Length: 186
Image (cartoon, rainbow, N blue to C red; front, side):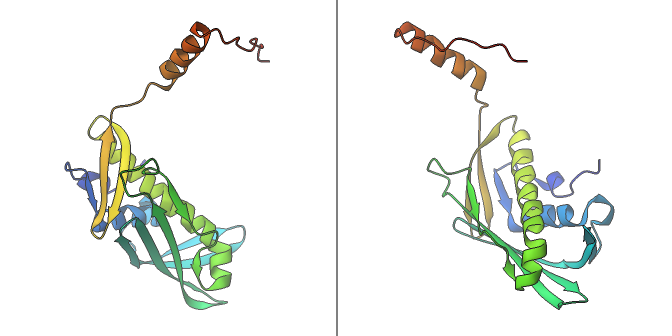
């Protein structure tokens, strides 16, 4: 598997500048064999569209990430395809949660056909980049804050979920709560 070129430039400070984020998204959109190409053709279920990844834009603002690319097709000519994600502010419980529009923005028919796929690819690139940044510190993502210049990541120690669940069950038993009988899985 080819290495994501953006991951090699991760900042040790916990910040991910917009250009690093854009490089990660561009690499995800093109795939490893065409990272430096100015355009790439996506094919899906008999349809094709040209993405001008050389013109791909990533913008950030407080709690907001917007990614836009120009597309081109025989049917619609050149048309933008835009996705946006709204994240928490990095301080509250929603600091690792993102929300996006139900439909991508841009030409309605291009967005209807290619928007969900583009959104999924962009989000996967963001998630991989954040995970790689946290892993570089030996930790897990704790919170993400988005601002004008990019992301700021706060890594945290991993949470032992099985241990936490076992401790919860022990507490319930100690309090006299009767547990449901265990069933065998088939």
